[in-house]
Image 1: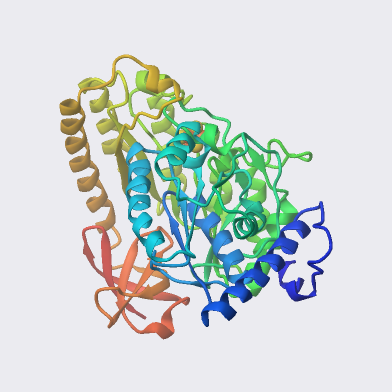
Image 2: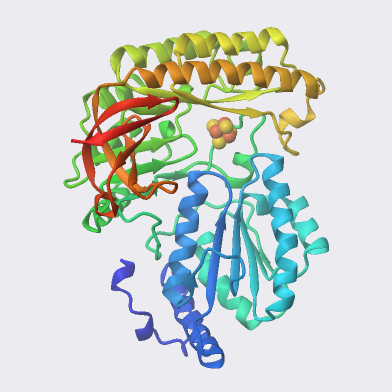
Length: 481
Ligand code: SF4
């Protein structure tokens, strides 16, 4: 839809419309006028820098921010010396928050040198009232703060920063709204993420996401198909369907549909070559989904299935709603049904009450399931979650020891798994010219492994057959066939 809207045709002297997204296009047109005034006064276009912290959902949101900034006339740059800097924040771990504060401190001096500079903050961290308080008192030079539920209002909020002097704060507690059809600036022309749902209802006891992203809301399937068709027409060959728990997609729609059924329909879209999705809660992963994956030509041979802990006792305290045995049975069933699949996972070390014996249970699962990769995290206490109030927090020394021990097993297993493809042929989507060696290009296999092959920029965006000549730990050196 947005391609059809001409901002210059919008009457910005009239009152703003009350319906969305028309209202946001109206404010984009108003912002464009402000940007033109900036150009006339300064003899150059203003620059904007969007910095993303955190997950794929945030990366997707940042593409929306970039799309609007570009639409209104900003030139996007990588440097935070820009005229408009926005941090799209993450709050899953405390060190993510600390990084944002550190980077904000650096911006203060830049703003002093560039009086026209505007600084904005958005994303999960802004949904925490203690954060807003801290920014108000210690970082009062910030111009705009908004949260996860009203990101679609960015154009309107941006316009407000041109019109008023002080800090603008607009945080919503929750929403049931999904506003579609706003501009988007994709990072890669050939692959794209697509939100299929927002929020989460699971309330794992360590996780802050349900509090900052709100309750689960699924997009209508037709809207998802329309977006994918549009992307394919625009050159996209690989999509990643995004949600905090894609396996519960569609349950709260007026006409419920399962994630497996959605995938069956997405598969039918002509021109689409690869489908990925993220993330799957093990408790909701159905046999039907395994069947769809097994029968599909387009769904990639990769499943990210967060384990978090291998101890049933700890899993209960985490409110994960599966046992060690249930997880292992599920993972082994998937391996049996789809032998060439890569299984990856997330594991938390040092959850309150975790003993050395609990950690041994986790290590046992890693050895049994043989994860192709695992992201291991040290438990980070998030204020407001049930786990933060648990009394038996684990000592730093035990956490460090446990973490190192687990990491070694994870790495050994991942290396062993990676090596099993040496000498075979696979299809890779070439994503970029290698950053360290310009004579190589870097691609991603269906199972999400990286392969470097001799080649040049003309291969970027293409799906090519490659021979996997040499496994070097976690990636391959190969040759295009
Ligand atoms: S499923 Fe659990 S870990 Fe994942 S976002 Fe929801 S509450 Fe957080």
